[in-house]
Image (cartoon, rainbow, N blue to C red; front, side, top):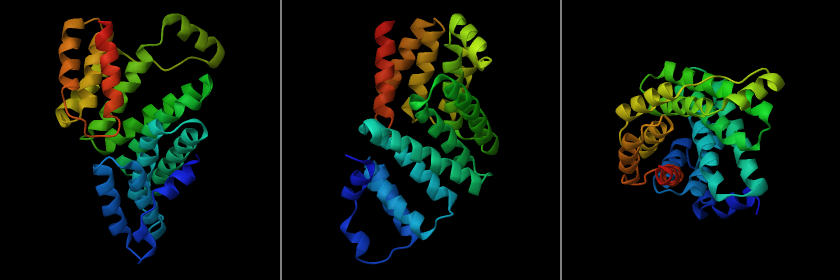
Length: 248
């Protein structure tokens, strides 16, 4: 089933009954997102975009919903969602380069697109993702998710082994360097800003495990696993946490 077909199925019957403002469609979308209904939220935000096509905040919301839909899709539909998420986030940055949320959306979308990229593209995307997350944090030092994205970036880069890094240097000119200590610092900062997001807690624990601090890692991950799911990616975060915990 194509992504377009999926979205059409999610259209509400009231959408053609009477015209609504962009703000009304946003409220509908926000309500659907809060209920975990990404397809319906996306449909509402796309309607809001029709009313206000150059509103970066709306574009950020659309980019997020395309990304949130990816785990429920497969094949061409999943790739299409990732491409659209990236396209909307890039447009949001172009329209409002001073918006932290626009740059954060770009970092998130780049991260979700890497599974469809070759090695060289992944290296280039990793550099752009770090820059976007750093810009988001500079524009909003209280952005817990910008800290989280930088933590994930350092976590991934630090995990590249010496042999793989040497090979990448020969073929692609090298890969960026990251450290587990910096990753831990960013996850700790994210936790302090927003301690209700279990993804911060779990990645903090997983990083401790990567550093060989097993006892602390177990405590941190278990705390995250006991937290209630509130967001679209919480289930995936818990699955990563369980895998790490089982390996300790």
